[in-house]
Image (cartoon, rainbow, N blue to C red; front, side, top):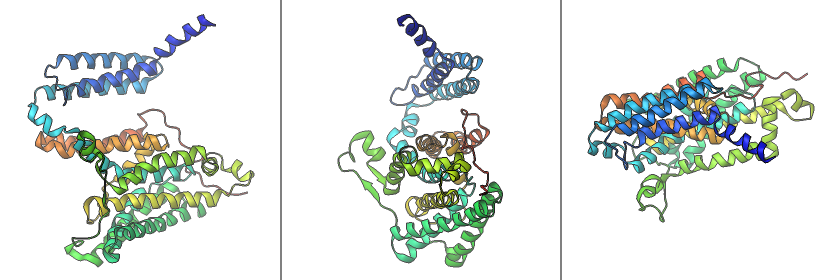
Length: 400
């Protein structure tokens, strides 16, 4: 028995997957050591780490983890280029751009609307309904959230109005996708165009060319007195918006709901095997309706964050494709809340870094501002991992 155990352990340790993961770590380290607080000014250590990452990626690619290995190899090349650029840059510029507490705070701000929409997308798609309309639902929430806060003089009521508008748009998607059994991708695309027209019309009709007025009630930040002035943590999370905390708390809550409760099991059963779920007495259609409506409410709350918490105003098409990025985060995260959180934080970090890079390099800033959209294409193409969607996603259910 002991001999068998000894033989198994090294095989697992040296598996292509573990080697590929090690390659990713080496690649990231090659870049990070040239940043504050490390600030290694000699490119040789980064070159060595990048070469190790390429070697590990090549070994993993030859083995059973081709995608992971290629990803590690390409990341090593990118990290090496960035590391060489950092070592040739001034220390003052690097410290100005890479103030980590500010970067983390900005990352959370950019990730919050994506996280709300991604969690909504997970609920919807776990029930078996594709929701391409997340973008439109976010846009509805953005406009009606700021309109509600303006008319009702309350950010809380504005958020409720936003949630209601997202639910109404989601209801339209549910009727077409579930009841009328239309193509769900086409229905979601139509929802996006419908939201663009509705919000554009009401925005011009209500506010004209002047735009939304200043001084509209906004969602407050939550100040943590114990850590607000404590170094890195104070700058990163010491003064964070209330909706950001709600989005973060929804991640474990949704994980528990999906994988530890009876209703979560029913939702997943409807998305995997609706015929079997119907046979044991589960109401397939009502569950799918509830999932789509919940998805619309969460996506609209993400849109409301943009207008009522982040910007304090509304501009036409202000979501700028964030609903599609959230949809990519669902795929990145393999239809799991924790995975979606990691994906949205990654997208948020790219946006945060792009905001700070103009002081360093305008061309690099433009590149990083496009990074979330590039990552969206990568996710949709399925390069990152092998994501397995719910078995019955996109398939209308016909009760016999």
